[in-house]
Length: 121
Image (cartoon, rainbow, N blue to C red; front, side, top):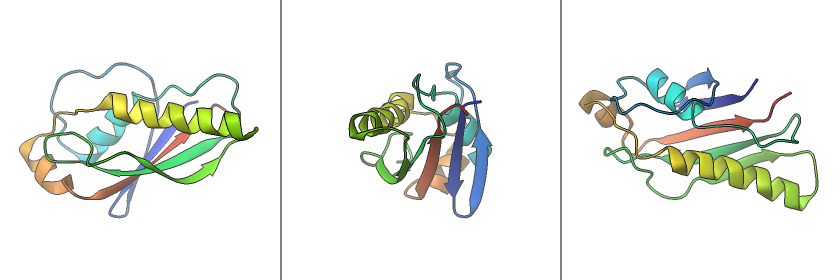
């Protein structure tokens, strides 16, 4: 099962899936976690691997800067490690911009999030 985990100000959500996003506004942090989870499809050939990315959003749904890996555990060599990190980073970057409701935008703009991208077991 593909898993991504989003943490913000003490809230952790587990999300999974790989379906495309719809252009409807997100209203809660749970909606945000689910939307980001739909952007992740683990690359083939990785087992028991993960990368945690750190990032923030602007109120307009774009990233404040490039996501930064904070924890990486990838079974394989350096080339495989980098491929997994790149896949997770690109999944996040390709997921934005997101459309936030006014209340969600006010709540999350400028906050730091961490999102864990996991491989299939």
